[in-house]
Image (cartoon, rainbow, N blue to C red; front, side, top):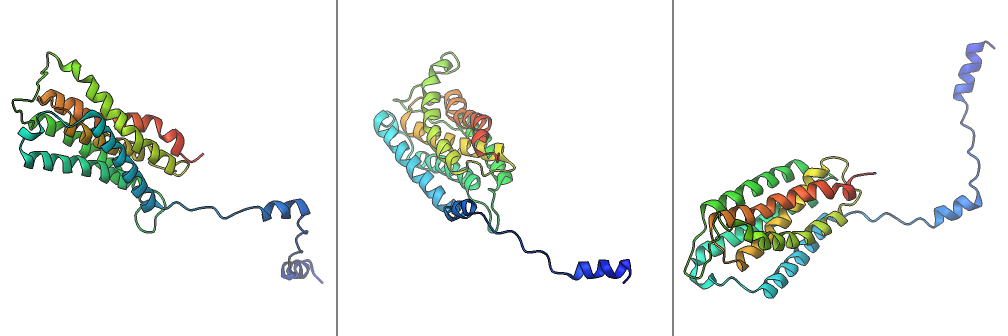
Length: 232
């Protein structure tokens, strides 16, 4: 038998049987349970419902704006719907992947962040109807609006925290854009609360404080949340 024949015979031979598992290893394997997969739509529903309940509670605690009955109903409703969609859309892209994918749509989430941030700041600066019961701080007293900024950020905290919990350890790429989308969505919920509560109606306040909540929430979330969502 030549050396080549010996190698061919060795290659054709069946592989050796693996050694038996130890009793300890078998016991450990027996304790393993299936990993629970993420349910994005269910998680989105939980985030939305809990966040809206929290937002309604804040409005009930803070009361509605003093000039609400004097303002155009159409404007109140359209802007409120805009804030609501600003909350829902970024959170949807942050939590729900496209069909057949595992990770969220971070590119669309990033686009939603940019649109919401620019859109609501611009809207507030451009369109801010005032009535006799409305208040105007103007640039002179612009700093007095810090309370609204604090309320808006406090409102944004809940959806951001819930989203971070649902996405913990699940984002190999695009984590900062996804986190920013959670922040922008939460900021829009804060903007909705302020829209229904705050009767300060000058452009700088509505645009840079109410709209600024979206921008600041997105930036803070992008800086902090990836520590929880990045794959380790």
